[in-house]
Length: 389
Image 1 (tube, one colour):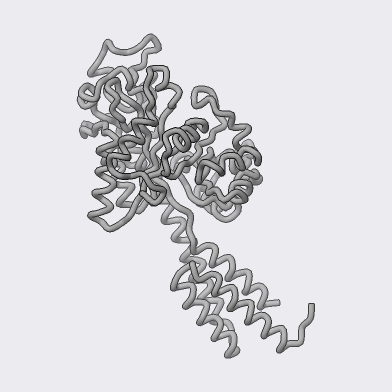
Image 2: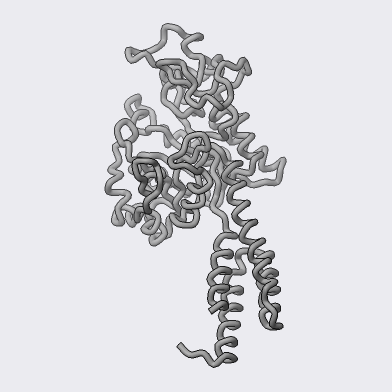
């Protein structure tokens, strides 16, 4: 019996060695979102991907900003006091790049109250002159940092509300693809991924713009004002099967992956990840924030999504925290396996544990070798003990 416990224990360890990807959402939480400084910090922290958002300016420049309006993260009201629309907001699409260059970027505030949304983050009243950047600058930054550090990070570009831009006779996706083409970033192997909430736009990018880049389908439960796509269909098994012909991954709101009770505690998982994996799609839920999360433990939340929900990565404001948690869990399992292996007293078990640890230390890609090794050991043990099933 102990042999079989050992087998499944090592099986779990091998699965844990292949950690999920960590995606820095808008860079990191420690500097104003989406600035070049925030993106650089995400790169330095080791985020596998850096997620950004793009909107178009009046002169068709791709601006790195999350909202279609400027009021939440810039000093637009101070610099242009009479350019707002009837709803009181100042929209990116109403300003040229030259005008947008004048603005400074701050930590996000509620435009109605001017109160900082995440009070423990970088002070919104700081005088440090962060600026808006363009997609070209962000691409140059990524490629430059990859070259200088030898670390190959990737860029996850979210195209904001394509249908909104169409109202102004602007094809934002076409401009994004043309910009990437200018850098010869066209292949699925290139460090660029495109995502959007508009599922039909992803199909347009694939089949009309003929892009070979990897595509992720964003999904939310809050459909109003986000996209016209039917998420109820696209997160069904039929919808996911349909999507698998076009995209490489799903990026759902985390509430679509697991079910929570009224206290924010997890009570179970949905079928979304199971269906996605069935059709060879990865799942990267959003947004994991150390300073705003459901339940009572951020650590337990991350562990549940990794080992029970079995997601393939985390989109997070705190990539350094998630990376450390994943590392801690892997280290714990490796240390535990070493301790367990020393309890064997027979020559055969000692040989097995030594070979297992050697295999584990080489690479998680040796899992098949390890599986065959343990299977052979089990068969030999059964023969020796004359056990039958």
